[in-house]
Image (cartoon, rainbow, N blue to C red):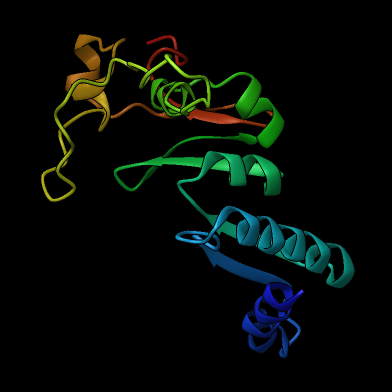
Length: 168
């Protein structure tokens, strides 16, 4: 109960002005799992009771899946895929989204760390590669990916920036 009171007092100043949208940047990072659950439940209650919308920024895919209705996946500052949360988690299209979802650790002993085939080189945001930003790490890289950034391919409910889906 005390943790819930702390959580409510933490969010209360942001809600005094009766916003319609609240930006939550890593709302549960560095918190104990039980406190994380309380924060998530509180956010759900506030959304329901006050009609709030959230812009949730998180690296924790379990939290994104729990809270989000719609998800945008970013790589080096670009949205590479956007879709309803259920669709994105069930059927990711962009290779980076696929790698993110495949990299989620499981509690099963002996499974180890998943190999998502991204290599060991980390991207340098100050030196963005030409073409598709993800091409140095992409397991499906094509020649065009190294030269020209892919266009956003959109359907009625989702979009993806990847040559695998634009037919070029």
